[in-house]
Image (tube, rainbow, N blue to C red; front, side, top):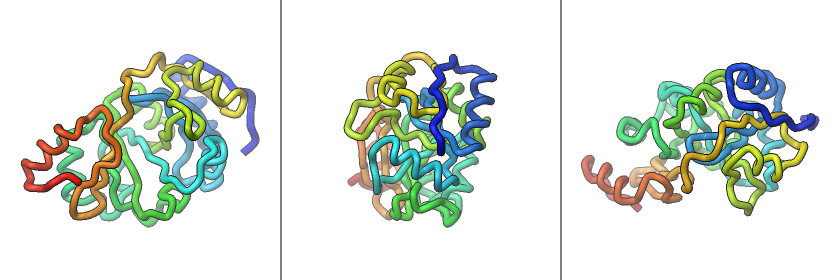
Length: 216
């Protein structure tokens, strides 16, 4: 992907349509998610995923996705997701809980990093959902920062990190939270907490206790 002059534009219908065009062409845009700013590109475009990893200076890590509607998870997950996945989604979505589940065979290895799993979140943020919707219903949302640096909380921090290497930065205002999403692996028989964030461990233990499961 060739770099184009970076643009910071206020989030809105026209900017979202531009973002969709850029992503369709293999570009990378930054946008405010329900937590911090994320880097969005087409999760089915291998060249775009490779460029995303190069941009962040990371390799060998899975890339999480945001979806526009809860039903969009079905095309990303093996058999549409397990009963456990669906139970936790019903309890916590829309919201800042990323669920890691077994990935569908259609997802690129660069997205899953060869793990056979993918992290998916249905955000509690209408603007973020609409951006994802106009961009095809599923969009990468890895944090908008070089590997090892703090996540960007506003469009200007994104621009400072990446200079002129992004196609577009959608300015959706300041991040809504001080914490990242919670990441929970439900790909096996016992749920495993990968990262505690906005949704607390206690909340997860309470929800899982109702269906008789422990939390690793």
